[in-house]
Amino acid sequence: MTSFVAHRGIQLRRYQIEQVNHYYLHGFRIRVDVAAVSGGMTPEIFVYKRLPPDPETGTIVDEFQTIASFVDMADWPVGAPISNGEPFFRSSVVELDVRSEADYQYIWTIILQQANQLCWAMDKAEQLENAETSWVGIAPDENSDSIPVSDSYSESDLHQDPIQ
Image (cartoon, rainbow, N blue to C red; front, side, top):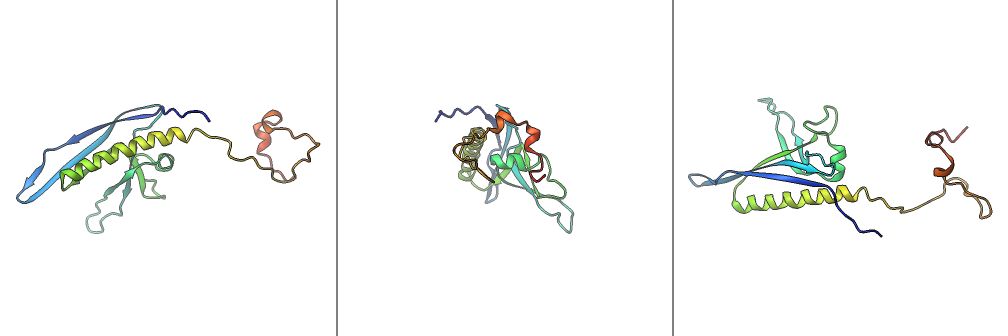
């Protein structure tokens, strides 16, 4: 087994405001955007869910869900959901309001950890290893020669109707 070397990267930029104190209410706002990417990554790593429009105002709200998985990176579109599909999409920016500095720090830590995990998973997903080789149909007996597809057939041969 060969050693695994990651080659993708994401540079995250964090913005913050000073603590907001309004009478007895406190709050913090964190905004994170993807400043740069490397190794073929795309910057849209934040997954949102578009909620149904408010029936009274018609306002549409996009709710942050998570950092994308490597499957989400392939499945969810960028910028807005597909009109007739699932309500999820990806963006390169997330902005959240929280009540405490501890929540603020926790969110930043989780974003860093999950973005790092995404880079690792995207790289690891390309490290395919042969897990199984199986015959279907009639397998040749031990005395006959089987011919590997890569040695004798073109790609178009693989897509022909097997029942002719």
